[in-house]
Image (cartoon, rainbow, N blue to C red; front, side, top):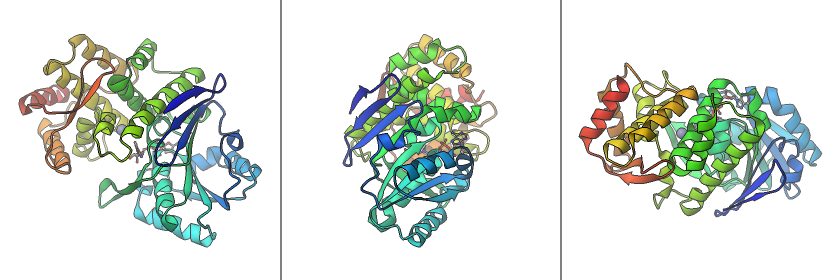
Amino acid sequence: MRAGKESSTEYTIKLKTVRQCPIIVGDGVLKRLGRHFDFSGYSATVLITDTTVKGLYGKSVLATLEAAGKKPHLLTLPVGEKAKSLSTVEEGYRFLLEKSIDRKGLICALGGGVVGDVAGYIAASYLRGIDYIQLPTTLLAQVDSSIGGKVGVNFSGKKNMVGSFYQPRAVISDVALLKTLPPAEMRNGLAEVVKYALAMDAGLFRILDKKEKGKFNTAELVDIVKRCGALKAGIVEVDETERSGQRAILNFGHTVGHALEAATGFQKLSHGQAVAVGMVAAARISQQTGRLGADSVDSIERLLSRSGLPTGCPGVDPDDLIGAIRFDKKTTLGKTGWVLLEGMGSGVVNQPVEESIIRKVLREICR
Ligand SMILES: NC(=O)c1ccc[n+]([C@@H]2O[C@H](COP(=O)([O-])OP(=O)(O)OC[C@H]3O[C@@H](n4cnc5c(N)ncnc54)[C@H](O)[C@@H]3O)[C@@H](O)[C@H]2O)c1
Ligand SMILES: [Zn+2]
């Protein structure tokens, strides 16, 4: 992985995975799509997006694809998590067949994590795999889901049950698109940014900590998306298919976060909110096990609050959380593997923790 400066607002990170994948970050880069990606070898392009993003950016991206010499086909998915299903994937296959898309077709996934995950899985499996590029439009997708090649859908009520590791040919992140993102979605992405800062990048934590209200200008957003992209790329390069364990660092805050989402029926809290509470729990467990100072825990909680994210989940039964964590662990063969902090920006993976400490901290965050 190499991060290089191209101009004052554009950066390219070279992700060296099985299929090499440049990550381009900047302000207005989508308008210059033809400059950043070579469409010449493709027989056709298929733009996959959701209804909201189509309304905002569909026309201009279609025009850019036309200008690149490819008459694009457009497949619009419904908005939200419900679109992450095998029936959407099937609809995608039908659409591609109908349009006679062959192995040289290119899918362009324009949207948040939902569009990226579904479109990526269609690309991974149609004709045993055709090329795709990620054009992420949410902060979460730009800093996290578009990078690393995890694609897939939910199945039988379980998230991301069916999928694949399949790298895109490029990730093009235009921070200009974040101007239309609703504040709640911005906060969702911010939770993942805080995750990178706490587990991997003390410098990023200091940048975030200086901001009064978690509101960023364009230059700051470019810097944040580039930094997070480089951090994720660095991890994905050493553990592309999540075999060696390093990729688990990206799950900081997610053990309790996922449990909280499950225990509250995926209704009460957004993913970002659940992860924020999960990060507080992990930080407190780190403190209780002698790895992190109380002052660090305080500054983490202050940063989350200032960013409009919760630091606790009053009213949730800690036993429900324990149950959900146990259930989650079963899928990893009963192994306990907490991601904890040994200082700001220094996450450690696969840490066993005594149940009494977990219970104590969960009681605290549920108070
Ligand atoms: N593949 C991975 O590695 C990975 C990692 C993290 C999360 N995910 C997945 O990502 C999904 C969540 O992604 P998300 O948070 O981006 O949600 P999302 O894709 O549902 O987008 C959130 C909302 O924002 C809207 N939107 C998107 N871009 C917009 C813009 N620029 N302006 C205005 N509105 C816009 C969407 O229409 C949607 O309503 C989950 O399914 C999760 O499992 C995947
Ligand atoms: Zn997450």
